Length: 112
Length: 112
Image 1 (cartoon, one colour):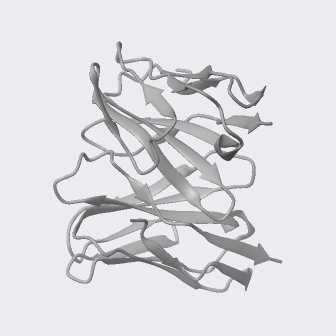
Image 2: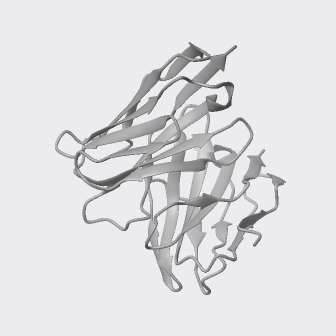
């Protein structure tokens, strides 16, 4: 099993550009989440999903969109990148019985 | 609102003990503990689901006082491998079980 995979590992964007961060898991987990991590702020929840077709907002959803068309994939879209979105982004998945979240390796995004 | 962790940082010698506290302003369904090493993704340590529950993981254990909305992580006879940043994550009553809100973290450094 690959677990949770994220692509790309690194990305540099210019202000105003859009992009999609990819996240996939092969553990058949129903639950998936996106976090951003900034120095001194810990991990902050952006969006989460409890199953295909169901998503909801976390603590810091503004500027991000998600969709969940399959159990395996949970892409995060930045609509119009801003320097404030410079961060490390983690995707995580879990099943409904054990709650343990498995994190992907992260995407380091810089917006100039 | 993010749970509050204390202390923000702690430095130990090998073999010493440490306690990390996590406090929330909301009624909690569960508390999760994760450890993150520098440059890596967070890794699950344990979850506490019931009021007053205690769990252990090798020489790392935790307690959860549901009434006080607090949890503590106990690291005994610390080893060099315990170094990293520890995060508590909380799930509130009435929310999705993967709507995990993390604290800002406690940096633990274990020295020889």
